[in-house]
Image 1 (tube, rainbow, N blue to C red):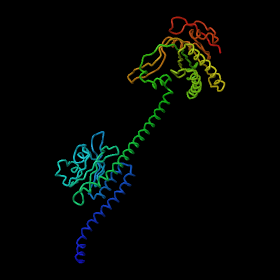
Image 2 (image 1 turned 90 degrees about the horizontal axis):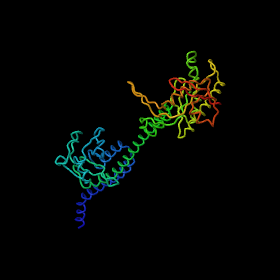
Image 3 (image 1 turned 120 degrees about the horizontal axis):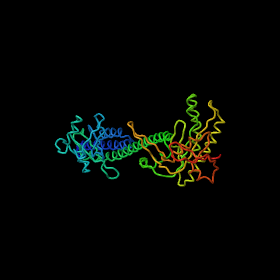
Image 4 (image 1 turned 45 degrees about the vertical axis):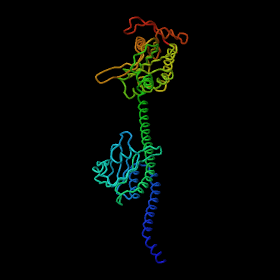
Length: 423
């Protein structure tokens, strides 16, 4: 009996050894699966992640090749960045094409041990890659929101065919893969957003710098208008009450002709910079500049307000001019100004000037009130501030005026009473 029993145990030994081998292989796979989970969920770069998934899947599943196909929502395609054994390139197929498409659409796993005998198999990928698919194990990739984001394929089992056990292992791998791919996609989205945000910041900084530079040439009204509503730039001029201040340098042609241009430019910059501070303090809008002159528009809801601001600006500029002359004497002597103000209704807005070279826009106050202001300024000498009758009438109680006389102004039919503002 003992011999018989011994022989029976001996006869069962090969079976137990086979079970041991199977159990050992499973343990090895579980260890590999554990390592896979730690490895791929720590990789966030998509390129590296694809390759890592392929390599690890091949090792665990014992396959010649494996592939991840992800769904592209924009194109409605499944795409793979790399496939093991191939060069890095991108394969794209329709989301309902081939075994991968079927698994993606139906969210069901497939084992196919004779790929070319299955009507769902798409030969196109093999033709492109030069690889011959013998058998396929394909698993849908389901994310945490229970949405299918692609498929994971294991190709050509080294043992000859895929089994249900293989399917369970690949399903376990797919859980890690789905998490890793979602994390990677989130990283890529954040990286893309960060780059776009950086580009936007740079673009905005560039625009701000351009705006800062252009503001030196563009009237404040135009800059504000463009910020609030660019379409308004093309709108018609609006009639409104304004006060216009004209300033230019007396004998500027002679100064320019007889002296070094660099020195002349230095004088203009020094004086006009100080004048501009006075203009800004009183809310004036520097509208036009020439080599020696400035046109400034003052406007507000009340005519008394802008007339007062214009005269206050003119008197301040006259005081600044005295200080500048005392501080520095030029070869041609003291710098004196022509200064004239007129108040009344003008049409204020943008003017488009067309030519064969393009368009040029100006923002100005046009009408008789502006013409008279310029003519009054031309009459003034030695930095005396002259004003027209409307301005004098409005501010008669606030300033002292000397009557200069009735003057015939160029291209104006009627004589105009002119007044000097006493400092």
